[in-house]
Image (cartoon, rainbow, N blue to C red; front, side, top):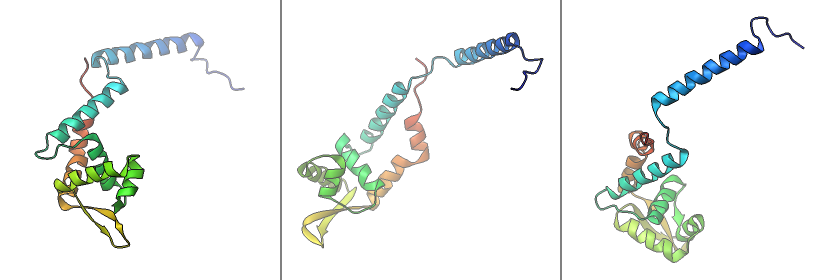
Length: 150
């Protein structure tokens, strides 16, 4: 068992701890109230929605955005059924999502040469540009910046 150095006593440790707590309280008070993780999350979702609807001609629903992000963050190509399984949605819903993304030029669908009944989903230059705008460090920083104290 090691000995406690003579300069540190229970009383001096308590004083040091009390001083540290007081300093931290003063710093926290100077910063103002900090947003909770829930506030930060809701703020980020709000900013993402505003970013998406602010894009000319590219209003996306949550499901369309989810499909777009799955396509652009995963190995490609996806099939309708693969995307349906990944998003836990029925294939007809995925078909509607893909139709909308294709109309916007964000994806291209083509028949699967190995199974003519299935469609393959491919990325496009316009979709890649949109994804890179959404994923740019400056955009991410702006979207995830927590709200100022209330």
